[in-house]
Image (cartoon, rainbow, N blue to C red; front, side, top):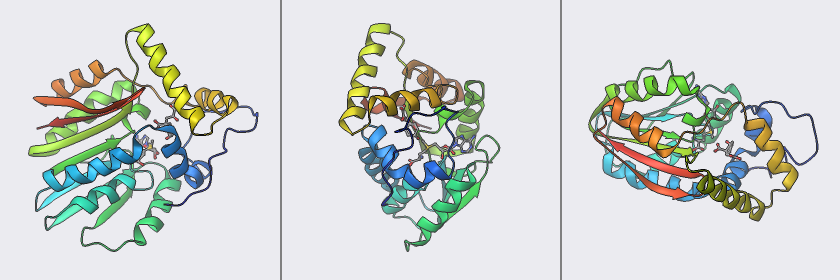
Length: 242
Ligand SMILES: C[S@@+](CC[C@H](N)C(=O)[O-])C[C@H]1O[C@@H](n2cnc3c(N)ncnc32)[C@H](O)[C@@H]1O
Ligand SMILES: O=C(O)C(=O)C[C@]1(C(=O)O)C=C[C@@H](O)C=C1
């Protein structure tokens, strides 16, 4: 999707908490692809995974869908009949724009968009569930219940994909991977001011876990197998199979 160049944090200002509002929506594809290493690769892989895991007569969930990039990627891979993608986000601005965007594509696989809180929606008959950089925005205390609910709503053999920003428990390693991430942002044209103002804006709203936290949570929910399939600097994408 074409989008405006992200300059939201380019001028000095009194920084308030980061919100997925109209201003962010207008630049979101540019923002996320310049801020998340491997974002395009992760979307491509969602497509490959959906072609393997999505079975006929099942539901697919895109939780925290923003503009629907993960839904579109999965839709490209789905080969089975009678599949419905349910894409959920609690930002009105995101859902409005996602709806316009999805209308521009023709497909046999319907995408149902809902403006709702993913902690409150029912998950049922799911062959694939994706949280692509969404869990980090939930209150940490709510994450176990969400993953447990997803497990309960999944079909045997179903796939959960969770992509996240990470913290590392070893301080020197954390510092090094954070420094490399900042170099990645600089390399994508973000200034020191943009980097530091965005960091301040995210401080209260984005709470990354460690890989160990994620793996322990998958196990507590009932997933017998989970693994990291992609990792770069402060970011990873994980898979868990029911
Ligand atoms: C980084 S964006 C996700 C990017 C998107 N999945 C993609 O692949 O392009 C995080 C999204 O999660 C949404 N979100 C955060 N908390 C949520 C919640 N409790 N319920 C629903 N959506 C939520 C935000 O509105 C935002 O659009
Ligand atoms: O950690 C950062 O500095 C980021 O910009 C990360 C991040 C994310 O992981 O979701 C934060 C907000 C935007 O959605 C795009 C990227």
